[in-house]
Length: 377
Image (cartoon, rainbow, N blue to C red; front, side, top):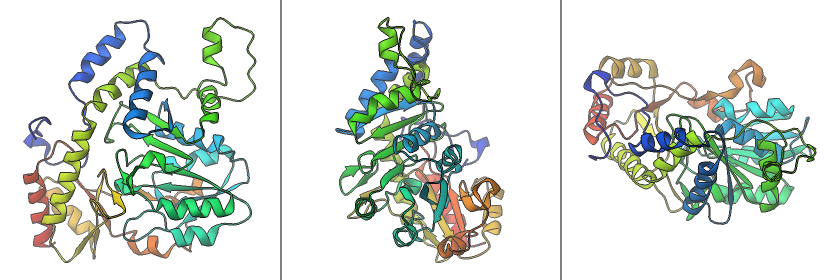
C-alpha cells in the first residue's frame, strides 16, 4: 500500500492514526480563500456525494459531530422526557448522553458475545408500553441484525435509530448500513474511517423530515427562506447550532475520493489478523464478512482468556499500543450506575482488548502483533 504513508519507527505501532489525504490541503486552502468558510456550498456537495455513494434514496444532513446527529435523530423520532429508549450498554457515551439532554429513560440492553453488538433477545425482553425507540450500534463496523430489529420496531410501533459511527461502507444483506433504520448517524471524528477533523452525518428514511432537520440544525431558522430575503420568518422550534462547516466538508470531499480504497485496505488488515492470530487464548470479535454482512473494519477486538493487563503490558513493552476504547456505559454515574441484568457484558467486561488497525500500519506490523500474542504472556 504505497498510497498510505509509513509510520515513523519511533512511534511504535499506535492504536489509532488519522487518515487525511493530501487533497484535503488543497480543499481547505480553496475554502479559506473564498467567501464561504462556515456552512456553504461544500456542505451541500459533501451531502450529495455521500448520498450517491452510500445511501440511495435516503437523505443526508451534515452536522458538527456524530453526537449532534444522534441528538437530532432522537428529536426527529419524537423521543420526549420520560419515554423509554432501549440502548446498547457497550458503546461510546455519545450514543446515550443526548438522551439525557431530552430527559428520556435509558434502558440498557446486553451484548451479543460474538459481535459485542446489542443483544436482540434482551432488547425484546425489555420492550414495554413506554418504549419509544431502539438504538443499536455497529460495533467495530460489524452490522447489527437489522431484520430482527426492524421486525421488533414494526411489531411494537417503535423507531429504529442506528449509530453507525464505526460502519461507513458496511453492508447488511447487500444494503449499506445507512439505509437499514429510520435514522442512521455516522461519525467523522479524527480517527474514524472517514474524517473531517470532527463532524457527522444524519441519514433520514422519511424525506418529509428533512426540512425540519435542517431547521433544528440551525437554531430553528429556515435558512433558505432567510437567504431569500424574507426576514419575517418565525421560529417555532427550539433549534441548535449543529451545522458542518465548509472547511470540514472540504476535508470530507477529499476523503470520499479515497474511501473505497481505505475500506478495502482496512479489511485486508482485518483479514490478516484473522489468518495470523492463532493463539487458543484469544477470540476475534466479528468477521470480515459472512453471508449476512460485509464489514468495514474500524476496530480489531479480541477476547482474552485471562490476564488482559499482562498482555497489554507485553504489547506496550514491544512498542504496540492497545486499549479498551469503549466501556460499558452503566459504569458512569450520569447514566445511572451499574446494572445487574447484563450477563454477557459482565462476562466480557475485563477480557476485551482493541489492537491497532488503520492505514498507517502494514501487514508486517500485524504479523509482529500476532507473533507477540501467539507466544503467550
